[in-house]
Length: 304
Image (cartoon, rainbow, N blue to C red; front, side, top):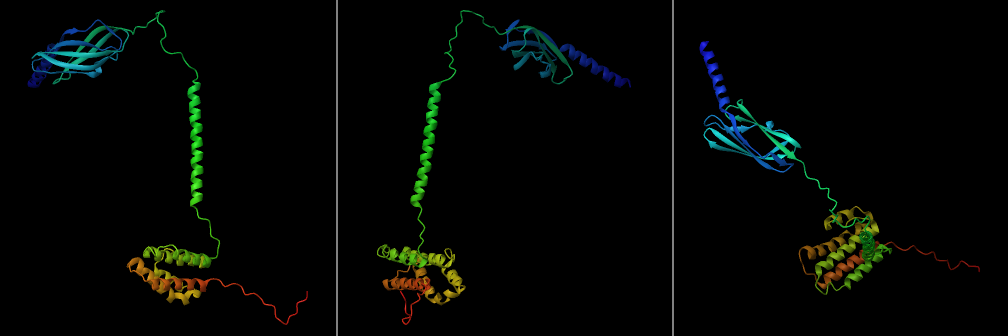
């Protein structure tokens, strides 16, 4: 028990000794500073040999802000703290701070430095003159230019919209209201006269010829075969009763075209004429027949 009391007494004496050794020796700071204008202050502290100091940031009053702090060892038993402070109070103020030993945070020493803060100087001189330009409540020239620019932009937008509509009307193809077989036969004639065959554009020629057949089937029988292959098209036609009889001819026509389009076969003039004839015959034979006219019997006497 005596040993424990001795240890506690020794620790207490050690803390007292360290507290006595940690003290402020000297402070230096200007007596008067300007509001919100940084200044420097210094504090010289002594402490046990080999110890380091720390600043408690919570101990700094609200009237000052520490923008920079340097702890510079002066001797093994003393340290100089150099502050850069920003004053925010008015009139007489006191800069407060608290230092402690890094190894013993409970051993502290306060620092108090009285400082007078002067307010910002306000000028009240009748000789001072306004050097800014006169105030303009409304700049007519600026707003007139803005209005003209807006009108020009609107006119340009209207012209651009009308131009797009005009170009679209030029590109749009008027609807052809002729019968499907008339359109198809005229397209065959136009293809023959296009010069594709003479320029050896055989693949383009047969692609167009095949498209004429597909467009005719769509217009005349409402069969959507535009995206179907030749085999799919023939299977589709088998489901249409009045077109079954033309399957063989169309198979020959489509096979000839596929050889040119996909196998790069160079067709002969006779082969081309044969394919055109097959297509013409198919269109002609499947076209709607004109209604028969009723003839007046020769023995019927017509009275006028």
